Image: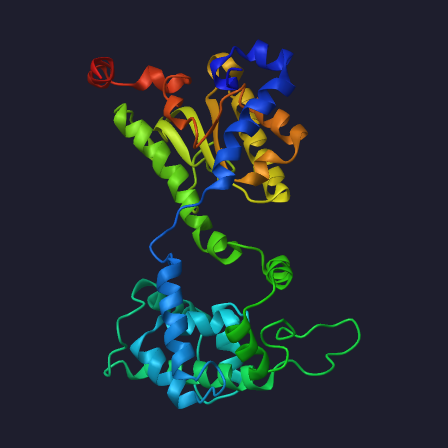
Length: 352
């Protein structure tokens, strides 16, 4: 089955369901893989920090704050291990620590500290970094108190405490038991139900995935030596009440617009399809397929692979010109962008 951008629009209209399947198939491979990003922590590195923390606390039987601070300053990734034991985000941990100490830790400071711990997991914190060391001390003290206390016996009807999980519900007794005996597989699966595997990492690299999409478009345009303007969120273009992500060849002579859209849920995807439909309406007002600008969509994320009717709308709006990371290498050849490839780029391509 051909991709919709390879077929005439009349063919796409005549067999929309088959072309929806083709786009969904191209999106599937993107759903299964994610970029690691600079701050990705391999298990061996995480496990090394876990063992350091475990040894320093006697198998988590004594969470003395001073002891934990010492090991965390020497091996900063221990902070990430502690955070995972709590089940908190960096911002949540910072909020709790700030409320229970005299040290103020902003959300941005907490995220920066967490990222620094992942980027340099085994680099000791400098003795000159006094503010950073104070923040680490406050975070560790709050974590130790929480882990020692465990989950309250009753959180109230219809409520569940964040520490009411297998490894922390009974305080350090639960932590030590989990470290000594390991958790039953069903418990591990239940914790995954609550936390979702790769959820935090997926959230941390969602912007990177969007960058990958835009970078792939720029690479395709640059390789073909096509003139283009990449807009910014606050940019305004005459004749456009919403600014496209890319205009070709420039903002004063718009012949092709490209929307690069990432969506991990169907609701957001629907909104982004509506945005692209509006660009198609503007093209029709400018003269339609013959005289208006061409609308091209480059999409990524599983949100676009949920609603078939929304994908049909997207195919109609772009007249079949929908690309994914899996086939974005065909972007220039299968759109009006080919009209703006320079002669030299064409010869380079022919010679490869």
